[in-house]
Image (cartoon, rainbow, N blue to C red; front, side, top):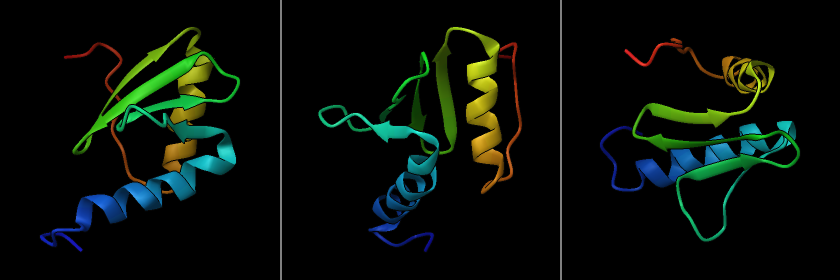
Length: 80
């Protein structure tokens, strides 16, 4: 899939399918901005980096736990 012109679209579709059962959705008029239906959390994804805005670490942990079901990831709570 890497290197194909449609790789980004395919990866985004797969991410949508994997996050939807946990309540995450991509904002309709803002591609790349994601929110949760009830939790106070939103995030953006640029290539392979997430920028996350949340209120309450438990909500960020929910996103991390959801992502870890499908992806290998590293956490940086300091933003270094």
